[in-house]
Length: 621
Picture 1 (cartoon, rainbow, N blue to C red):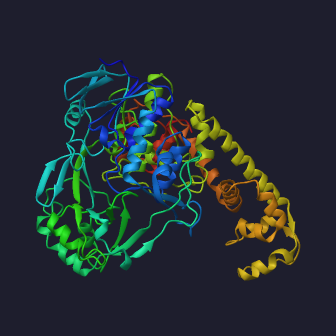
Picture 2 (cartoon, one colour):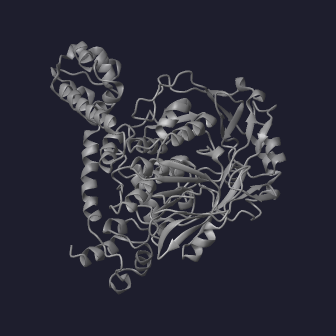
Picture 3 (cartoon, rainbow, N blue to C red):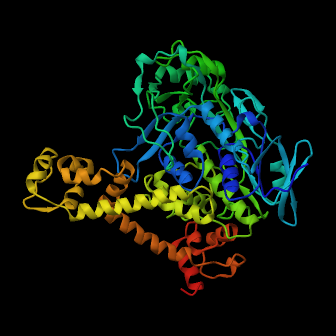
């Protein structure tokens, strides 16, 4: 009934969709298996993509040939570039998406791919022979053969939904949980654990008084995620900001005795940086109010998402508390919020390629690895799909280093540091973030994707070359153009910056804080004329490269030093217990994690600089 597929992807969430298109765009024949064809690429929680550090990840996915950025651009209803008041390393794009259109667009792009097939059914197990995966077994007992498998099960592995004292099996509201895979993987020797996440209630937007709330519009000139020719956003929808109050908090507390969080029914650890509303008012009892973001679910629906009000309290308590928020006094609820527990597999059991160490050609991506967030899932799916294809082709894996991409930081953190709570990406996790900006993801990563053989990237590579050459041309012009004091001093005095006393180069003025290239172009007609052929993306790339040149050089020097350790290999089968000089904790952690390089070993929690010195001596350095 079925051919032997190159790659079977289990689960069609954000990780599964990116895994399927990555493998297919490299030439693999792919089967995407999902419990429900109607929920492909479902935005299970908030209808948004990007945000702090997450926006950088979406741009990196796009630069590598993934689809998340393209689909976000086609379906977003609002765009904002966050942290614009800070340095460019912190700039993070975020888009409010149309939930239904987002999923619809993903399905259309998947169905348009000739190398992707679909099957709607639960996968209950894997076919494993001689330590290698050879296919999957479905709930109906069908055996589907393949050369590799990518598991992207999200919250469905033995998922358990909690609303107050009620609990029932499910991977998402209205959808059943997946069973069988966890039990088989444990039999194969894998460690597993439980995690928890949650979602807020959905409201009827027709019953909300927006006039008493703070307006949160999109950017006046909206940007986008994809480096391809996606359409510009027009007719943005606003979001709104509301606040809880003491009265809201007191109402919520009336349900604490029935809360699964506080009475011990929930065992899994939840995301530290996205706590439920009951957790917030319990942990921050001194706070009189908390911010809520009232976000539209799309252009053609009145459904509204209450960002910041995630809850597993009884539905009657949620309803009473919501209606005490200013502006929501008459709100009607579509459905209550809930918490969900699910199985995950600690990611120290993976190679850097996301292949499992116990079973060859089996890859994990997304929440099965302990992460949270569409963007974190999507980038893992992309990398797992690429590496599943490469494994079938018997080629070396594609691995991004911490200095290459936020994606590299995320996977390195997971594999070498592990996680005991849902992992979320932040800019602070990346030590080389001035190199890993959202504006240069294409320059960093598109050439790598093209070398892999990702299809249809030739036009993008041409644009990357034009961008780099354009940036260099602008920099050369700025360094060579001499200006008179009279041309810039009035502007500098207005900016409260020291006037120049003599003729000098434009470059020196541009390097001053609060002086933008656009300001100088408005002052100097010759510069304005020169910039005319270059679009905003090239201009921004050139300006950041010049303004932050010193910081960029300094970080690159640090990268070069770190990469020396990354290139020093360790023998996988080495017995660390025989190496005198290592601490007992280092022996235990190194034996468990089996790092491939000294660089990896240096990032394992519990391995000290002294332990690394011992490894360097052992390696003959």
